[in-house]
Every structure is written in C-alpha cells, then in structure tokens.
Image (tube, rainbow, N blue to C red; front, side):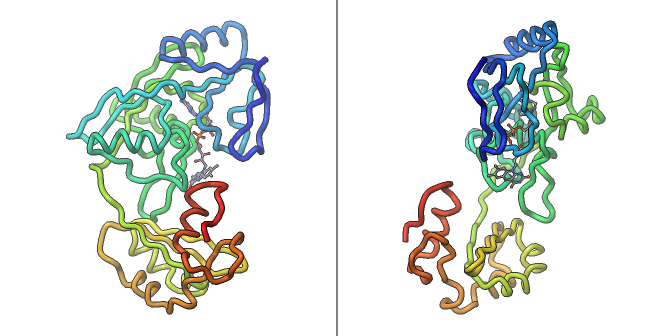
Length: 279
Ligand SMILES: Cc1cc2nc3c(=O)[nH]c(=O)nc-3n(C[C@H](O)[C@H](O)[C@H](O)COP(=O)(O)OP(=O)(O)OC[C@H]3O[C@@H](n4cnc5c(N)ncnc54)[C@H](O)[C@@H]3O)c2cc1C
C-alpha cells in the first residue's frame, strides 16, 4: 500500500495500491504488462490538477514526471517532440530556447502538457484553439503493453481520439506538438468598475489576442489583455477611466480599501498562490 494521494485542491483523495514513476518507456511497458497480467487497473496521472476522479484507482497509479527529455526539434515545421513529464512552464522554457512556443496556455502553467492536452484544457482568446490542438503525434503504451507511434498524417482518426483521451487510450510516453515561432506578448492590466468592463466586453475580446477578467465582489474588477499589436480602442477607453475609480485595491486581505500599489497587490494575489498582499 502506498500513501494517500491528494489532488491539487484536496477535493479528491484515494490510496493507490502502488505509486510508480518509471524512468523510461521500457519501464512503462513492463509495468503496464505486469498490471494487465495481474488484472489490475493502471491510471496515469499528470500534475493532479483535475477535480474529477479521472486518475482514481486502488491499483496502480503511474507518474511520468521523471521523463523530461526533448526528443526532437523541427524549426522549419514548427514542431517538437517531448517526453511526457514536462509541466507547461518547463516545456515553455525548453521550447523558447529552441525558438518555439505553444500558441496558448491555460490560467496556470503547472499542469503537465500531457495532462492539459488529455483534458482539452483551454486558455483565453476567442480565436485560439484549445491545447489538445497542439497534439500532432503521439507515442503511447496501450493497455496490452504495446507501443503505438502515430501522427495526424498517418492516422487522423486515432489522433482525434488521442487528443482528448482522458488517459483512456494508454500511457503517452512522447508527444509531438504543433507550435509557433517564439513570440512576445504585451500584457496590460486594469482595475475598473465591472460595468465599464462589460460595456466594452465585445470590443475587448475581439481586439485582443487574449482577454480575461476577474470580478471581485466588494470591489471593482481586474481586466487583463495580452496582445501583439499597439493598444487598441477598447484598451484606450479602459485606460482613460479616471484613476480614482480605476485604482481601488481589489485584494480582500488588504486593510485599506484604496491601495497605493494596486499592481503589486494584484500580481501577488494571482501569480503566487497562497501568498499575501504586499500592501
Ligand atoms: C488552479 C487551476 C487552474 C486551471 N486553469 C484551467 C484553465 O485555464 N483552462 C482549463 O481548461 N482548465 C484549467 N484547469 C484544469 C486543468 O488544466 C486540467 O485539469 C488538466 O488536465 C490538469 O493537468 P494535469 O497535468 O494536472 O493532469 P491530471 O489532472 O493529473 O490528469 C488529467 C488527465 O490526463 C491524463 N494524463 C496525464 N498524463 C498522461 C499521459 N502521460 N498519458 C496519458 N494520459 C495522461 C490523466 O490520466 C487524466 O485523465 C485548471 C485547474 C486548476 C487546479
């Protein structure tokens, strides 16, 4: 019996019979065959950020966190093949060194790329596809312990199933991703009354590559946009809202309602989970 396993939020707890962390594909094959022979269920887990019991098992829980090699980079085709232990943040750094970038991320970057792809994780951006779109090819170990290596050109139907497969097709050991040449995003944040944001909602999501907002009950709103071009009309209108009504500290922990450092409050609240306001 191994220790209790708990997901990110604590909403899912169970004790797997065995927690295994194979270091290479050969070990994955051996463990899958062993589980199949013994009639045991095997589930593969990413970073444990899903809230539903996708990975729950009392048999074998497998983690590929130890497998983190970049196997192939193709700058001409904007593709790369990675082992499946990379978080989104780690993959982003490795890809940037090679001049490549994922087209988008979700709200956080601590999920594994394989986990995010397997659940159809999406980011913001009205015109951007979800992260599963990146999956060009896959190498996986199926429930019989066989290795399958294919891609969208060789087997498009299989790849459609693999793209959001919730770990049900087998254990991905390597994924080939469709990428973009590395790019920079400009990020702007505004604290504005909710009604101002909603009034500009259609323009903000149309004119920005990414746009999202958080509403804080008891206080105004944070609106955030990420874009590649100069400031657009809707952002200019947000920026033109008088400072006094725009810069009110949105932090519930802050003792003063009007904060002198709204951006720092905001950043510490949203970038570092559990950290306290700096104001
Ligand atoms: C704070 C937070 C913010 C989030 N933000 C967003 C967001 O902005 N947008 C959004 O859409 N979702 C969001 N999510 C949900 C999250 O992106 C998904 O739950 C994602 O699947 C988590 O990835 P993971 O690595 O933790 O995978 P896990 O939750 O561990 O597993 C998810 C699935 O992937 C499968 N899997 C993992 N690795 C492999 C592998 N090697 N081979 C085969 N299958 C595998 C598992 O079997 C399981 O079915 C958020 C979750 C949290 C907790």
